[in-house]
Image (tube, one colour):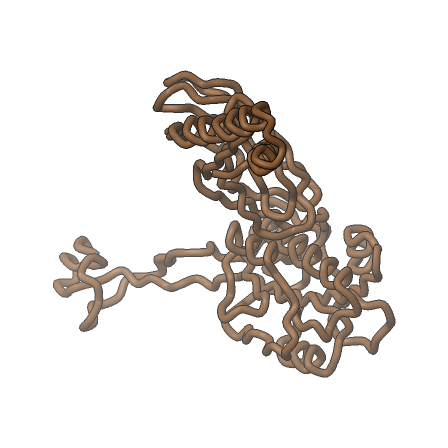
Length: 375
C-alpha cells in the first residue's frame, strides 16, 4: 500500500495546516488538517480492506514467434470474491514492452477479456507476466497493488530464410535429373533373416513356424539401419565475429539450415557451444533463441557419430576452424566474414554484412547442391 501523488500532496497540506494552526490561531487550519488526515486514514482503511480474489488466464503466450513477428497475448480476468473496484492492470513481456489498461468493476463470476500485441525483436526468451493489478480509493489518495497469475515463457526464435539445395553425401543422390532417397528410417530395426537361437537372444523374437520345421529354436535377426543425420554447428566464439551483427547473421543462418534439413527429411542435430548435442524442434530453436557468444575458445564437437552432412556456421575462419574442417570435412561452411579468406577445401559461402542469405546460398551452391525432392 502506498500514497499516490495526490495522497502525498494531501498529507503535506494536512501536516502544514496542523503545524501552522498554533502559531496563527485560525480554526479553519485545524479543520482543514483534520479533514485531510481523516480522508487519508479512511482511504487507507478502504483500500486495505479489499482482498481481491482474482484469476487470470493468459493465452497465446509461451509459443515460438519468429524474430520481427508479432505475438498476440489475451488475458481473461475474473473474480471469485466481492465486487472489485476500478483497477489498472499492467502486463509486461520482459524487455519487449508492457501493456497497461483500465478494468471496470467486476462482479463474482463476471469475466473481462483484454488483448495486446508485442513486436518480437530481438530474439531471446522472455518472461510474460505475472500481471500487476492496482486499485485506489475513490479520491485517488491511496493505492495498492497485487501480482496476479504466473509468468509464462515467450520464445522469439531467429528469423528463417527459405533455402534450396542439399549437399552431396546427405543421403540424397541424383541421376538423370531425378532424386532418390537412400536414407534409412530414423528409428527402429529392420528384419533381415532367420538364424539359430544364441544365448542372450530375446525370446520374443523366436520364429515358431521355423522352429517347428527345424526342431531347434530359430529367431528373427534384425539389423539397425544406418541413420543418416545432419549436424549443424554454430561457432559461438566471440573472437570469430567482427561485431554483434555478424553473430546475429550466423544465428539466422544456422536456423535457416536447420529448417532446410528438417524439410528434406534429414533430422539434424544442433551444437551451440553447450555440453551436448541438441535435438531438432523446440529445444534446438530455443537454444538458438538464447545463443550468445563466449569469450573463451570453445572446443568444437566431435562428429564421429553423425553420418550424413555437416554444416558449420562461423565468422572469420581461423586455424581452429580450418583444423576442424580438415578433420570432419563438412558438407558446407557458412562464414559471416567481412574480408576474404583462403579456400577451405569444402563448399563455402561467404556472407557479407547485410547480404541476403537465400540469394547468396543459391548463387554459391548452384550446381554443387541438389534441390530436394519427395520422390
